[in-house]
Length: 293
Image (tube, rainbow, N blue to C red; front, side, top):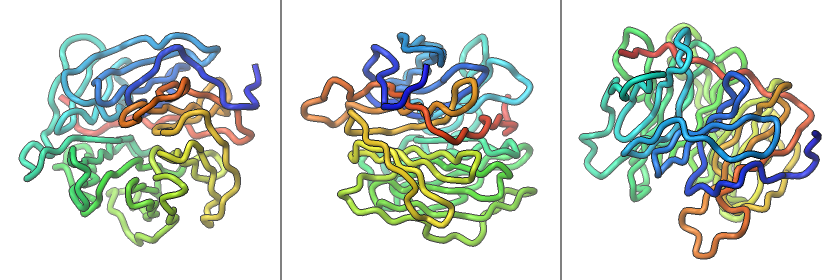
């Protein structure tokens, strides 16, 4: 089944479809504000299955290395372990004491097993967001501060290049990552978008080292070359694409989570999970070995 145009992949309509991951031959994603962890097979359109429901916002999850069915989650005001069985187990609080009401947002594991999780204020206050790094045996590190709504990050195959989006600012920056420590160096502007383009939201790097970006409010996803030039744009039937990943049996199916939140009049595809096939595959989903209890 070749998808040459964006196709609605589920009957569900999500408030805020984010945090897409291809794990163990299935797609995993969150309905962020509703605190829901969901999954579906990649074989054909089907209703989403609920794996977990939390009473706090659930930003994104990463599978835990050597612990099948366990997830490390950016949830509420910190990081939580969602075990295959049993109740969620708090790992660390990160923003519970922030001066303004703040929650976790997007998160991902890098190829070296570190877990990176961003925070934002509920009001989207400028400078109120932070990207945290969690590594085994170390205290959480505020790796990038002064953000507004961080999304991503996304890493290349070696884990030595990191991209980070700040959605309302229209900015994507690129960093060099020390593979041993996770320390960031050489921050540089990668992309600057105008409001007419939409805000850079979910991001992912493919096997060719190109960066895919979901454009919140722009009804499109774009693929950029490593030099920052635009390679292609795919227009979408949903106004607010939020999370993306490359999955399916050959990692060439681009899945796109979209959102209805904030729309005065949602269209028929707003909040839908979308899918379209692309020529270049993605990278395998990294597993977290960040400290868990």
